[in-house]
Length: 245
Image 1 (tube, rainbow, N blue to C red):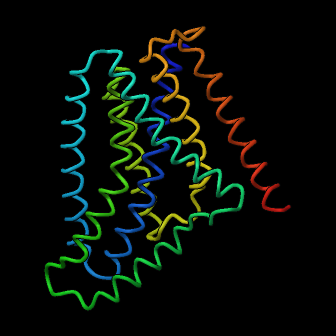
Image 2 (image 1 turned 90 degrees about the vertical axis):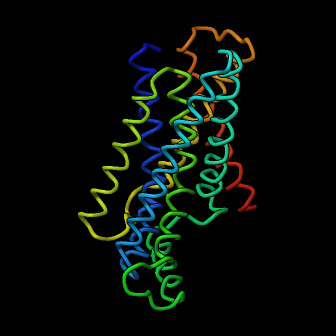
């Protein structure tokens, strides 16, 4: 795999992962903003972004102090943990064993919860602030791990951060344009793709950290992606067959 190909894979993985999480965070923020207080909800978003930025700076600095092989092993394990979690849920959804994520339903649930919390006070609304901040923090933390691990290992933290920022800008812009949750985004398909890519990169980096010299170098990533995708699709087929039998 060429340097440009590796950078493209990095940017694509970060962009898709961040776009998925941004869609879910946008749903939460729009629900409390439309139902209660936009001012307080956006303040919660800003506070969460400050915390996430601090985590990126702190975690990135900490990882850079590790020896290169230890760094690759830690990054590989982190990517595998996140990637396999995404992939497991995506496989279960594709097999029909787990309900597909529906942003419209999630939006209505958040609005119902916001209404049940009582009438907002004039001016500052602590509920809107807390819910928006919590939603952005929870949805953004995995993206932070992905941005830092990819960026630190391949020395492209700026590229990873730019891909994440572009994803947030695209999702936010789309949300403002339609003034509604992005229910038509193929979120489950995107999660499947991200799970495959993160798991493949995780295997690659972990192997390097353990001293394995992959045949073909970075080019083996293509084979890992194809292999992980094939195993995942086989799992979907097997689970569907088991559910029907």
